[in-house]
Length: 335
Image (cartoon, rainbow, N blue to C red; front, side, top):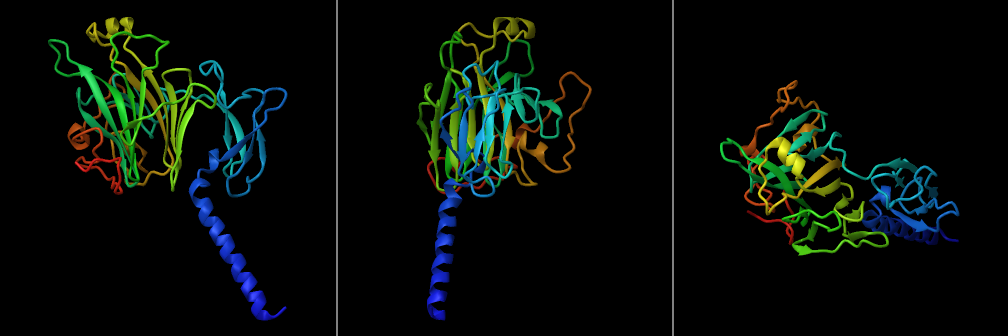
């Protein structure tokens, strides 16, 4: 075989490998959840074959007996099997519901637990929109609802909706306005680039879309009113829709009107690619070396900054300190 022919063969091989890598870098970049589901064992333990690049590629991982299913129906009582096909190449048992006392949580009359572990309140104002996270590749705005009983100097507020903006896209997760609460009725709304989408309740019970750079998944973690939202490589959100109950209303003297139970979101965030200069009510608490300005040791440590984080609308990436620069597309407002 001549040297010229050998050289040609080597060049073709290199080009083929490069082309394969280019194909993989899109859909195959969500390493932790990039797998093919196999038939379960006779014990009911689910199995997958990993498709992600790296050392875990083509390996078969099996859920442990303690949590045999990825999506158990009794979500509140049973942990789920979390399969990680990244370099960790492991399975673990985890809860799939928001922990309102955990890092990155946003619950109640908005109470946050920051990335630094410090708890604080940020009240904003009813009908206001605020940047919860603003970074180079991500913006999450929250829409606040609320009420102000006679004699009070501030609103009682709750988060009714999130707008998750990344690349040129927008994903909205919102609680419907309802006059009375029924646990058997789904009060969750999901919109993708302005269009409402249905999240199935059967089978995998998820809605997903594969984009050029990443995958977006909204999966039910209970039959109704609970979802896990994943934007691969950027953020994971465990979200629950809940109302203000009568006893809660009485204890806190919210004076909720009879025609509105103020359905709102309880959420826990997990971030994967924040920069050191991330902004936002919650985002800034993930900065390296961040020191919280809130007063600790008091019942309601308050975080100010409404003027810095307020946005013109739920879909706007603009605020006084916002960093997000959207790509041209259908999902993000320019105002």
